[in-house]
Image (cartoon, rainbow, N blue to C red):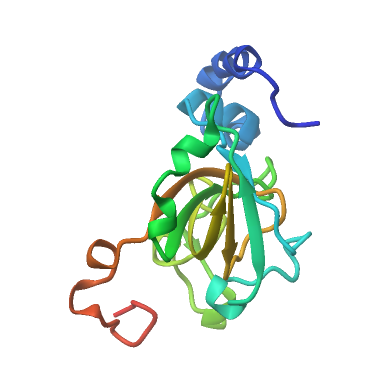
Length: 186
């Protein structure tokens, strides 16, 4: 349950979303938000992490964790992957689908790694965001038909993947190729 089977079912939900106010819990329900935005998963990732507890915060913590993504995009999903094998890494744009539907994102939060220090939500990697969308970088191991196999994955099994983009160092790496030493923070 929970997965919408047809475009007609997906589009049917969108009008309910249009009537919801920002304060309503339905605002955060993925089955209402994503169709209203015209966005649907290209697949659901299969990982070794069955729950949020135990799932690493960053893929670099577990570089050997393997996962695969079977694409369900179009009539010939393997066509969408032509050329992807030329890249070493991919960005996965995903939905934080396990946040629940009864939370209200806060402007200030206290991430665990900051030991009580409060920051604005946009200065953190918290999954509890105004739009429950995440981005992670994974090593692309190989492409097999309509499936990609990756390592260094930090996602819970079944996470909806909204998009996949190749990592291009000349575009994606910060200018100068170095970080400020604080995880990008100044």
